[in-house]
Length: 631
Image 1 (cartoon, rainbow, N blue to C red):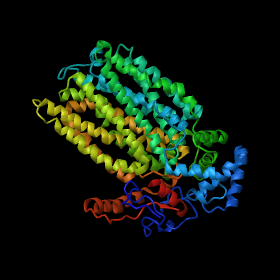
Image 2 (image 1 turned 120 degrees about the vertical axis):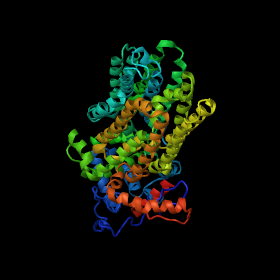
Image 3 (image 1 turned 60 degrees about the vertical axis):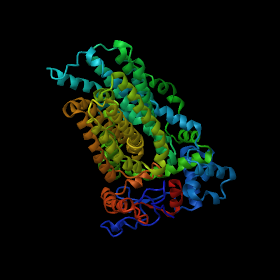
Image 4 (image 1 turned 180 degrees about the horizontal axis):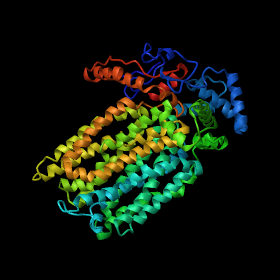
């Protein structure tokens, strides 16, 4: 049984099959038929295997008994014996005599409704992600504050005067410094912070920094002191941005992992919406408006600080440190039954044993070097880099950072610009819920490849609308707002939720902190470059040139994603080791020689009978459950 590429909402072409895959006769043929050894450096056959496959029930039971003795979980032997059997043959639980009817009812319920999860799991991921509101809220605060704080600090020289260019660089630097600070400092503190106090502790520390720094910025009296407050904010953003998505990913079940992890972007978008709304509320408070707009970003940090320790620690973080009793307790809180929790833990443990082949030195520097030296990890690093970079290339932060300025240039009053920005924030937030639902069904890669071309033309259309004569003000501002709103919808389905969810899942646990730090550093560094340069780009190219430039960047991002970012849906975190063990040259060759011709036949020539041979080979005993989950 294999997934049909033509099934609506099913598996994207070329992702799943039981049969041998790409290029059996290639130069890599010497490894093409190997099923005895899983090469995590060069998985040239693109084979996805279950490490428990082929083990007899007696052998499996013996292995589980040894594991229970070593891990201190003997009292849960019954649950683990059942759970191991389900992990070994996930599609065959109905025929397992070892399971009672209650176990089977729970597994049927899980298969029928992927979102049927314990309430505590939803709360855990929501609490961990709420800190993302600070990022969105701060973007909107600085967005509106740009209209007034430069005047108060004497860095608002008129165009054409001696200090005009200098002041533009200073304002851009103040806007961008949290992202630069996060990229160069905050994210790289993630690994030692996680090692010292755990995932929850690191999130708590970031919450403290994100509470203090925005509040302090409201009381500054010169631009250097404001800059200092925003540097501290950046450290908190870096710690939070590198830890919270990983924390959510390591808690979430495979079938809805990206949907839950992408709640991060939902909270960012909600922060944008609430921040824009707060800007409009305080807009008429006079000289203190910018202080309220910047300072109010401390509010989302409060629930993060108060509730993060009510969540269980990441079970995979605990397992990596041999704390299996606590890990099982965490899994138990986030599954309906003991058998489901035992299955999750034992399958993760089995795959982590294979993953240990990738582990080198435990030193921070060596683990960072492994991002670029171990082939499997290097491919994940490249995919994460491209996916994170794409979020900045798409141009979203043109609007998030400077929408008020751009809308004023388009012909809006300052208050109208703030109200229109609320609409942008609302759309960015509302449509992330659709992405949360779709991302585990159609896939991360599919969403990106479909939506980036839509962002290209909608942003280009917004640029062209600036050509409408200013005498037709209603048509001019209305059309610009319409296409920007449309761009926000497309973004909310792709470049918004995908990058952080994708990066949080692609790395092995040994390099997960460093990998996520690198990905977040990439994202925030380029966000800082955008914030730093946009005033100057606007000054040099105007709104038409700026929007047109970033419209073109969407096509660059699409090409990079097409060539370097494999799909990750319906794979456990540990199974992704096998996905990213496929050499980059094999993946790229497949996209160019198989996927592109298929797309042309299917969607240009409208040949509904067009087919494509799949890239990834899934063992027969896994294929049924994987395809069922995909569909």
